[in-house]
Image (cartoon, rainbow over all chains, first blue to last red; front, side, top):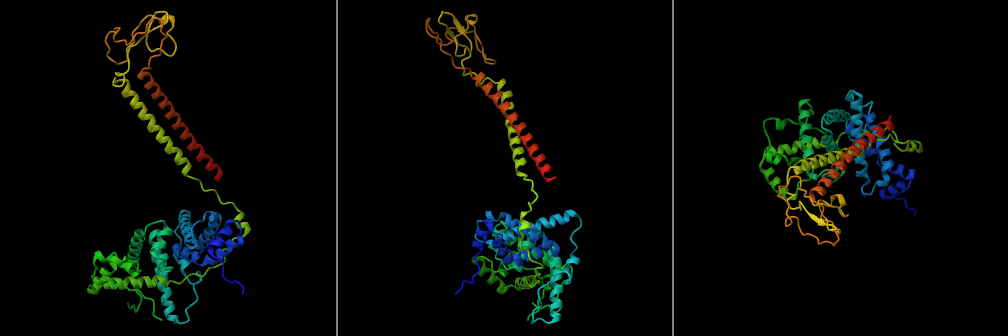
Length: 199
Length: 234
């Protein structure tokens, strides 16, 4: 029986470090969804997220020979966070904050396909809340936004976030508390309160 | 399917949770609370409606954030050989000029301290008091030479005994006793110990010159590195 198992990250990383672009592109295929998603939630802009994602993989390719760890996903997400931060800084420097509205419409951002069990009404409600949440996320300091995206959107544990952000678990805990508290205040101030909210 | 909702109203109704426990709410909701706190927190939750509401609110906020739609990847981010062939713009390494400037600062501090020590030392006799302030040797010809003689015998014109006082040491008139042991005629002149004042001064001068030169070199290096980086990037 043929071995259909995908090669492990470590093998792909070592082949890429040896100069194999094919091996590296397999890594790209494997992680581009999460890298783009993290960049998008950190930047709140599709074009900026695209640029940051491409930059992430280019930087990763150039630095792959220095990858010695065992967690390629964390390593890539660390690069993605740095690339997003740089992208944010670059766009701010260029003048004018990124227009949130131009990025938020469903026409601009291809969103995930609708859940078959979701009614159209529930979907509209969910997307409206998501847009408000993203707007609120954009008001958070980058460090707090980063931990909330990693923990809440992508389900990372505190320890992995700590290693990814080069901080301690205590710092992650504190950032997530302050971030959610701020998010709560922003949502409250904007009057975001789902109709029929039931806790 | 349960609708994703979030409502902040409860906490704003004046029902503030206990601040001692409120800090732990997020770790509790994320199942990251340390085991030693978990039991105590759950016990508190059992009897505190305000904190229980705070936990519920956080859970609904977390659920709402988690339910944000994932963006669909708009295109492939695979790298092409052309993309990896392009050299990235050089990011100026700011460490090198900073290191050079730090070294320069260190050298300047060294220079200043040396100068201060030098200035203080020139008016202070403490270190010189222990050094022989006056000494005499007899040359092979029977002449007596005095003064800071080097490894060579005193020249004939300096053969007459003379007393040399250390710059600031209060020394009385030179007497044979105070001048140290006298060599008999015919004994080879032995170089006396070099006075501490002289070697100390020499070392201080060397340090001053060395520190100054290092500071100048480091500042120059920092400037050259920065200029080269700017040229490369322009």
